[in-house]
Image (cartoon, rainbow, N blue to C red):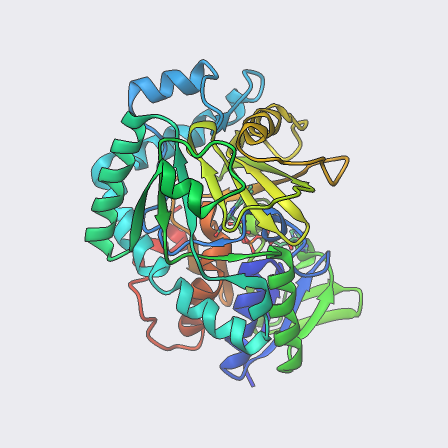
Length: 410
Ligand SMILES: Cc1cc2nc3c(=O)[nH]c(=O)nc-3n(C[C@H](O)[C@H](O)[C@H](O)COP(=O)(O)OP(=O)(O)OC[C@H]3O[C@@H](n4cnc5c(N)ncnc54)[C@H](O)[C@@H]3O)c2cc1C
C-alpha cells in the first residue's frame, strides 16, 4: 500500500489526507494542535465560488496613496514593519499587472470552479450539512461611484466565468436584511457562495471523516521531518511515523519549515483579525462593508467581524486599530451587541507573490510534495487542490493544468 505523512491539519491538510485515503493510501496526518485550529479556524468561512480572480495588489496611484496615508481600512501597515515586506510586495506588485493577473486568473479559476463540488462531496460524507448555508453573501456600497464600478466588474465576472449575482437597491437590501440600520446605496448579492457557521468545526468534521475512513491523526512537530531510507519519518507524540511520501500543508508556516530542505518561498504576510459579538438581531447572510474593508458574518459563536490585510510578520505585535475601526463602522450598520471574547483572534493568510498556490513535487527531494499558499481563499480551495495533488501523487492526470502551480517557479 502507498503511504504518506501529511504535515498540517488545516483545511488544506485535512482535505489532502482524505483525497489520498480515498485513493487507498495509508495516511498519517500530523499537527501540533487539533485539526482546524489555526487560519482555517479564524477566517470568514465563505466557500467563495465568486472569487474567480485572485486578489491582486492595487496598482492605481490613487489607491496606493490612500493605503500609504492610512485612508483605507482594507489594508494596514506600520512604518516599522514595512522594510520586512518590501521585497515580497515588489514581486506581488509586479505580478498584479493586468496581463500577468489575467494569466494567473485563468489558472486560479480552474481551481475555484471545482471548489463547491469538492466541498459538497465532503460535506455530505462528513454529515456536516448543519454547518453550511447556501445563500451567498452580499457586498454593501455606500457611494454611488463605487457601486457603479463594482456593478461593471460584477457584470464582467458574471459574463466571463458564469458566476451569478443580483444587484440590490438600498430598499431591497433593507428588505433582505431587516436588522440593518442603514442599507447603503445598494448591494451586490453573490448568489452561489456557501458559508460555514463554524469554519474550524467544518475542518474538524472533515478530520472525523478522515479518521472514520481509516486515516490516522497524531500530534507532532513537522520540523522533525527527516529522510528515512528512500522515504520520510516524523517524530510524533505516538512515536516515529514513517511513510514513502510526505506532503507539506502548513499554510503560513510552510516557507519557514521548508527552508532546511533547500527551498526559499517568499510569502506576503497578510494578517487578519476577528472578534465575535452577541448581536440581538443577527444578519441572514454575511455582509461585506466595502467602504470600511471588513466582513460581518452570522456565525455559531456570534456575529463575527473579520478584517482586511495587516502587513505584519507573525512575531510583530498585534495592532487592533483595523478591527476597532471595523467595529465602529459595524455599530452604525447593525445592533452589534457586546464582544464575546476579551482578546481578538489573529492569523496570517498564506499568500504567494504571484497569487497562486504551490502544488506539486519538490524539485530537490524525491517524495516531498507541497500544497500551500492559497492566500485569501484557502478555506474555499482546500478540497479542490487536495484532489489535484492526490491525482499527481497517484500518477493520475489531474483535471486541471498544474504548470502554473509548480513549486520550482520559486
Ligand atoms: C481574516 C481571514 C479571513 C479569511 N476568509 C476566508 C474566506 O472567507 N474564505 C476562504 O476561502 N479563505 C479565507 N481566508 C483564507 C484561509 O483562511 C486560508 O487560506 C486557509 O485557512 C489556509 O489553510 P491551510 O490549511 O493552508 O492553513 P492552516 O489552516 O493555517 O493550517 C496549517 C496547519 O499547520 C499546523 N502547523 C504549523 N506549523 C506546524 C509544525 N511545525 N508542526 C505541526 N503542525 C504545524 C498548524 O497548527 C495548522 O493546523 C481568510 C483568512 C483570514 C486570515
